[in-house]
Image (tube, rainbow, N blue to C red):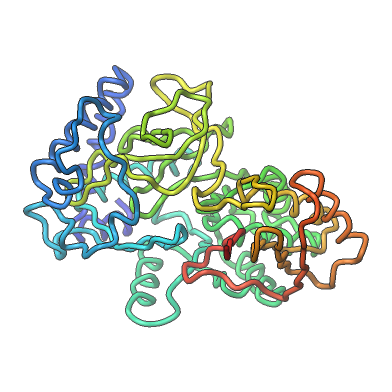
Amino acid sequence: MNRFERVLELSGFALKSAKQHLLQIEKELQKDTNAYVKKKRQDIFHYHLKHNSFYQKFVNQNDIQSWDDIPIMTKANLQQPLEERLSEGYKLKDVFVSKTSGSSGHPFSFAKDKYCHALTWANIIKLYQQHDIEMGKSLEARFYGIPKSGLSHYKERLKDKFAKRYRFDIFDLSDEALAEFLKAFQTKPFEFINGYTSSIVRFAKYLKSQNIVLREECPSLKLCITTSEMLFENDRLLLEKQIGVKVVNEYGASELGVIAFENFKNEWLINTKTLLVEVVDETGKALPFGEEGEIVITSLYNKAHPFIRYKIGDRGVLSLDSKSGQPILKQLTGRTNDFAKLPSGKVIPALTFYYVTKSAIENSGQVKEIVVVQNRKDQFDIIYVADRVLSDPQKQTILEAIEKYLEPDLKINFNQKTQIKRSKSGKLKQFESKI
């Protein structure tokens, strides 16, 4: 065990036992995945139905004949005092407590029992090991947000020290700040980058502007893990070229851990060890592979707090190539609340608007970041970071693309910024609707 793992053990997270348990889970999955999932989902459902008064009231004696009949849990359902949501026998002092980032518009506090949290870490450690990364031993370049002050700030700094993480300030992504990022890579033996997609992409664009491949400056670098935000294919190509290492895309949530993690074929393998991931229709019925719907997730081992058929706030598709033993997440199609409503009545995933805009102007090389804000059904602001104002021909290219892929007669305002303000967590919200 390295120092990071020992600290987890001393903090009451039984990591050694969790690692052994994870091996047993893998054997059960290899033997019969369906049997394992059905048993574990029923076990956790009946546990909370018996031991959690909050969940008893939530289910409210619904007529449950099958798994699809279990009501979907939303983030809004969980916006009540945490102590009222804990299962019997659990106190706040005895569990792992944290908060979601609030990127869905519904932030809340949540809890995991300590063994569930240990299983979460055991899984992450094993996922990283397949890429020759040792959590707590391999030096991490961390592109995450951090509270600016107070006890929370110092807690994160202490965690960084034990986990061997060097955290970059992603709230300042000016060229001057990014030059300092580069100096850190030139002097520290980082083995992997981990963090928010938009921040790492912004750094890669700076590297491109300086004609620098990061691995040539930092030969110890092995891997780049992007998480928490969409990774577009052209951004992946940019990262792999300018950073010079393999890019692995992670899909996760603070309240659940890793939901899906890319393998060496760039397939997003669903975490079936500790989670049940479903794609459902508007009635809560699980959809066949290949059909788009809302993603709902069940945490199979969290006894302290129920996450059962929990709507995470994303829409996605499970691949037709999925096998019964290993579902594959084909794609995320955006957050459920991220849709643009147009004057014609058309409703489009907001990322369509964002992607059309991004594709139209990023080839110029001068645009570093883009955010789209909808003020009215027919009016959008395109806020962008660039060294100079877009030219009229560039703006015309965007307008033509919008008319072609969306609809005509939309009013588009262009607003150049030197920097775009991020959320408190450090994430960049690529689309915002004010209607």
